[in-house]
Image 1 (cartoon, rainbow, N blue to C red):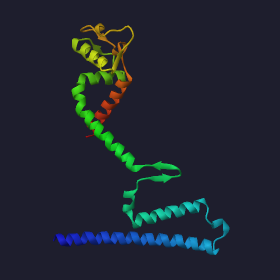
Image 2 (image 1 turned 90 degrees about the horizontal axis):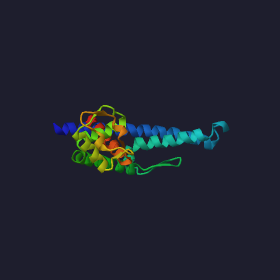
Image 3 (image 1 turned 135 degrees about the vertical axis):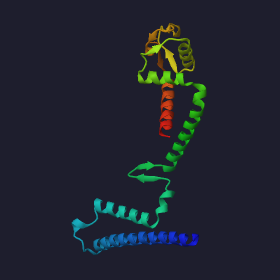
Image 4 (image 1 turned 180 degrees about the horizontal axis):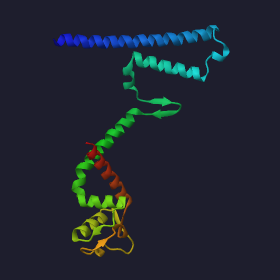
Length: 197
C-alpha cells in the first residue's frame, strides 16, 4: 500500500517537473524566435531591442530558470538589482539572533523588573501617569527604577514627595532615560510576541 502511494507521489512530482520543463521550453523557443527575427532583419527597427525588450528577455530567463530549477533560489546568497544588494543570509541570521535575544530577555525580565515596575515604565511612555497614588511600594519601585538608570528624577524633585494615599502625576517627578526607553521597546516587543502566541 505504501509503495502505491510512493509511486503516486513520484509520478505526480515527475509530471509537475515535466510540465515546468515544457513551459520553460516554450518560453525559450519564443525568446529565441524573437532574437532570430531581430538578427535576420525580419523585425523593423522600431521593434528591435530596447530597454523594454531587454527587460522582457531578463524576465523570460528568470522564468525559465525558476521553472527548470526552482531549488536554485534556496542557494541565493546575494541578490543585486540596479546596484541594490540584499544579503538574504545576513538578514535571516540577524532575525534569528534577535529572536534569541528576545527569548533571553523574556526569561530575565521578570527577575530584574517585577510587573509593577514594568507598568511604571510603560505608563510613562504612554502618558498614563495622572492616576498614581502614593505608597511605600510605589516609592520603592520608583527608587529602584532610578537606581537602575531607567528613570531620572526631575530637577528639584524627590521620591519622598510621594506621600501615602495622595494622588499625583508621575511625570512631574520622573522621566524615562534613553536606557528606559530601550527597555520599554523590549517590553512592548515581548508583550506583542506573547499576545501573538
